[in-house]
Length: 209
Image 1 (tube, rainbow, N blue to C red):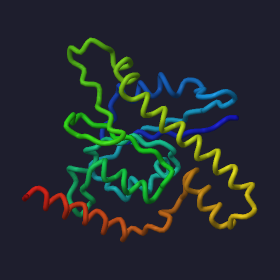
Image 2: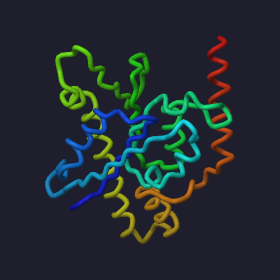
Image 3: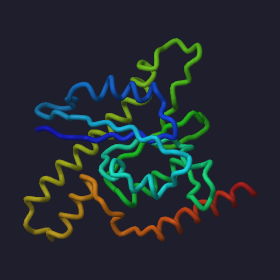
């Protein structure tokens, strides 16, 4: 069985070592996680200019068709509030609503940031290991798990197509979500704006406590 997984790395200025690691370890040849399953990785790097906001990023065809996304946590934080100021962790929540079957990993230099699927960037300097060894320890386990999760989703989606007891409309919605879709599903841009506003209000409240 051959499975295609699209990995998208999103940053304002792409980290060369992360990009090279993905190319060297994940893009050169198919991965084999279990017998009779070859996973072909297609990797895209999306550099988001300072002038772009979250809507333009969400509307990028590479994002909407992704299976796994790696996003820098501070990607949008320096933008004006009317352009959608929020962190990669909050972007992950929005993606979860729009594309529920996409696995999201957060990339950051901030070692105080805690949470699920938080990956710290290679610090460089005088540490006694190469970036390849570092990401083999810190990125590969989470990325492999995300890839396997998405392979599982795709397998279930294929099984759903054979099920005659489930409404065809529901099956199509699931398939669109698993394989990427060109719409925002049931979440409108206005819904996203409200969600961002709520995030900003919460952040402001916590800052003054």
